[in-house]
Length: 179
Image 1 (cartoon, rainbow, N blue to C red):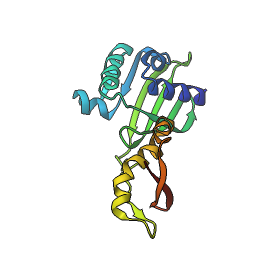
Image 2 (image 1 turned 45 degrees about the vertical axis):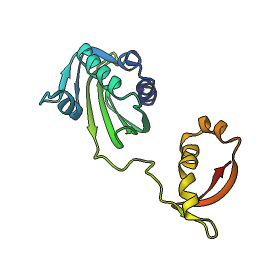
Image 3 (image 1 turned 60 degrees about the vertical axis):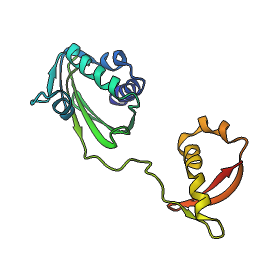
Image 4 (image 1 turned 90 degrees about the vertical axis):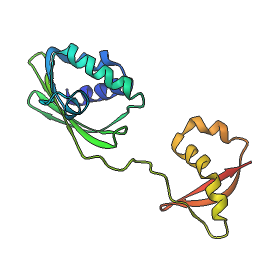
């Protein structure tokens, strides 16, 4: 029960598909989250009812179009599941604890947010390899980082480029490209 619900729940959030997320919840479920306090000022941090939560989550998705979660772990209890995930957008780990009724609809959910941490992809420090100019490496670091962090969408941009320099980020060695 827990793993399939968790994967579908994460996929629904990443797709910004509220219907896919809310299909798991009873009409009168109760949601508790520190973000309810932060974003809409309800001191108890609680919303009751699927429609109230739908409006709240819809505003959240609209204000955070780059929202992305990565599933870390699923813990299963008696009529409950805890979904442990990284909110890449908020740069923190979150535990979503969800309790289910006998028909396997969520009746209560609580979000527990970890403290914010540094973004996963901070701007790298550039350490050129011996024999390669630091200034030249810095000028081309943006292109290399877009390629490394952006994946497939940047490969087509790099086809007309040649390997120009090598550099080190942390303990990893990379190539710099130029025309």
